[in-house]
Length: 299
Image (cartoon, rainbow, N blue to C red):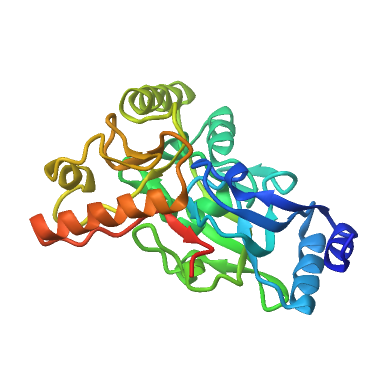
C-alpha cells in the first residue's frame, strides 16, 4: 500500500485505480488514482489536509450525472460524499440535507412531509451538493429559489454562507469559480402543500420525462444550456443532427439535446460531436451554444 492510500484509509474507505466511467451516468472516463468515501465532516477535513500535504489534486463527485470525464488517468483523489454523507433533517418548512443526499430521494421525503418546492428536482439524478453547484433546474424552477444557505468547507474551516453569497445564475454558482470549496450541506426553505397535488405533479413530470428523454441509455442529461433566443434543442434539430453519431456517441433521436453513449463511446467521441454541433449552430444561426455538462480532467 502506498503512503497516500495508507493515510487516506485512516479516515475513510479508500480505493485506488477506479474507472471514472463507473462513477458517471455517461459511463465515460479514464481511471482515478484514488477514490475516498468520508463518513463525516471531520473525516473530510482530515482528507483535505492529507491531500494538500501530498500536493495532489482532488475533485468532489456526487452521482456524476453532469460530467464529461476525459479518457486520461486522473492522478489525484476523487472524494465521493454520496455513500455516507446523505442525511436530511426536517424542521417545519425548512429542510437541511448533507451534500451527498440524492435530490430525487429528498424530493420524495419532502412529499412525505407535505412540503412543496422540490417537485422540479424529482427527476434530477444527482446529489444535493451537485444540484447547488450547478444551480440545477427543470420546468422553469431551480435550486436558487429554495436555497437559504450552504454549509461550505473552505480555507480549512466549515461555515454557513447565505444564498446571496452563492452568486446563483443560470446553471452557475460561485462554487464553479472556487473548485477548492466543498459543499457539505444545504439548508432549504420549502412551503406547505397538499401531498396529493405534489404527488400528482411529480407523477406527471415523471411520465413526461419517460416519454421525451432517453433514460434507457447512458447520458449526462441536457448537453447544452438554452440560449436566450431559442431552446438549444430547436437549434440542434434545425441543423439536422437528430441521430448523428461520432464513434460510439450519438445525438439522441428521442431528445436532441441529449448525447448518449450508444456503444462504448470515448470522451473524445462525445466532445467531437459537441464541437461539431457548436460549429454548425454558429454557422447556421450565428448563436454560440455553451455546454451545460461539466468537463473534468481535460488539459
